[in-house]
Length: 405
Ligand SMILES: *Cc1c(COP(=O)(O)O)cnc(C)c1O
Image (cartoon, rainbow, N blue to C red; front, side, top):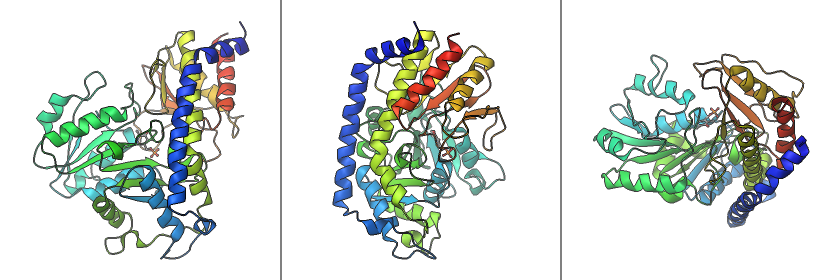
C-alpha cells in the first residue's frame, strides 16, 4: 500500500469524526458571527492608534467581542501581551496579594509558568509572598480528595490548566471543568477559579467561563488568533477581576483606558472570525496524524475514539532519533523555513533541551502546523495546528515517507 492509499484509508475511517468536527466549527462560527454583529463591528475598528491610545475603539471592541464569544462579562485583548505565559503572569499578579495562596488542581502547571509562580529572586509570585500548592492528578483526572485536603482559607485563586502542556494526560473537557468548579464551590470557595485555556478555544461548544470559571487566559498565536493575529494574548472573565488585571497590565491608576497599537487590528478581528474554522482544520489534522500513528504502532494521545478537548496530540517514540526524525519532517513540510533542519536547543523558560518545528508565518505560532518536545525519555513529540487540513495531510505524507521505510 503506498502512502496515498494509506492516507485514503485513514480518511475513510475518520469520516464520522470529521463530521463532528465540522458540526462543532459551525456552532462556533455562528456564535462568532453573531457576536460580530451584536458588537457592531465596522471598518473603523481596524484602524490603529498611537500614543496613549485613549478611546481606541478597535481595542475596546475586541475585548467586548472576546468576552461575548467566551461567555464572560469582560475581556482584555492586547498586542502588548507578548505570549501566553505573559498573559497568565499578568492575570495572576493582578489577582493575588501577599499572604494569598495559589492552588493548582490540575497537576504541575506548564513549564514556563513554574518560574512565574515559585522562581527564586526573579520577581515570581513567591518573591512577593504568594504561596503555591499543587494537587497531583489521579490517572490524569482531578483528584477530588486531594483538592479537598489542600484547601485552606488563604486560597484565593484555584488554577486549572485545560491543555496537557508537556504532560501525557488528556486535556480537560468543559464537562470535567464544570464538575470540578461545582466541587470547589461546594467546599465554600469564594475566590477566583482561573483556567489556562491555551489550545482549548473553539474545540468544544462551550468555553470554561460558561461552565463556572471566573477567568480564562490564552495566547493569540494559538487557537483564538485564527492563524492571523500577529501576536498578543487575551484574558476574559468576571468584570471585577478583569478590572484588577487591567490595572496590572498597564498601571493601577489607568487600567484599560490606555494602550495603542499603530499597526491596526484587522488581523485580530479577521483571525477571531476565522478561528472556529482554523481550529477545525487543526483538529482534523490531529485526527489524521493520530490514526496514522496508531496504524504505525506509535502510542499517541488523545485516543482517536474520543472527541478531543484541545488541538494537541502527544506521540510517543521509542528513541530520540525517531522523535527527532518526526519533528524534522514537520519542519520540512513547512511553508516557511522548510529547508531548515531542526536541532534540540536550550529554549528560555524550559529545563530540558527542546526541539521545535515551527516553520510558520507568525513566528512560533502553534495554531500553525508545529511539533515540539523535550528530548528525553519517554520521547514524546507534541504535535498541533495546521492552518489547512490539506497542509496537515501533506506533512503526514512526508512523515510516512520517513517512518514507513
Ligand atoms: C502554550 C501554552 C502556554 C503559554 O505558552 P507561550 O509559549 O508563552 O505562549 C501556557 N499553557 C499551556 C498549557 C500552553 O499550551
